[in-house]
Length: 319
Image 1 (cartoon, rainbow, N blue to C red):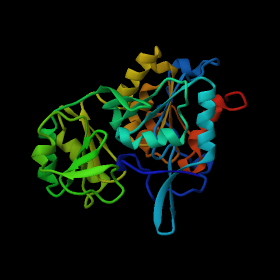
Image 2 (tube, rainbow, N blue to C red):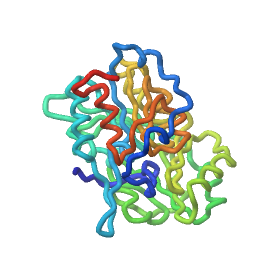
Image 3 (tube, one colour):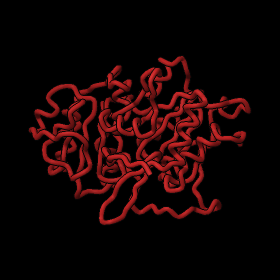
């Protein structure tokens, strides 16, 4: 098994999901089922593979009183087959850039003599190349109105703004293991005094449903939002998502959405799954994510990402 440190609760699969297989007849299926016509062509193959990290490539393992995330050999090998076939593999996550480079290393996505990887971070607000880490595109916005409105409803919430390459500036410390890098304490007014690419709002005393209702009630005009599996809210500029970040990458590579296979499991993957030529939800995904997808693979505990990748890059012919 390959271990990786966690970074963003917005990406995590529910702890209650187990490793047992879900019978085919009871597995949720997409209601949309309107894949890009190019991906239905018998000669279609993905030229760009966009992969969510937590809950897609990484799964939670509980044991010995601790939890950790692992990449299984099956997933690692399937990603390698996609690379060997000439596909561009792009990680797309809610994690910050410095929370993604270790995963790229563990997957061996880069090697000497090859161009640096393209990686989409912070739910699309940051696009960078690696190695070395070089930000090539970043979207920023004024987060003050949205943060002020949210804190009126959740005055004890935790607030974090990414300090790229270092860690986060926060109003108070987040629970252990939820953020990577250093945490520097600052007043909320100072955190959002200038343009930012992403703001994290976390309330350990609330639920994800509380935050979904809050975001819908407030409208959060001028701001995109993503609610994680817990009471974790990511704020980003309007129009920014994993899909917009991937569109930037595809354009640089001379590709289009029709060339893309995307796999994910969280609310922050919905735009990406809708945008891609073929969008595939993980088996443990919630219904809104499944509804956005063209198909559903097995859960992360059954190496669903590897199963989907092997359909296109395995030893046999695609189904």
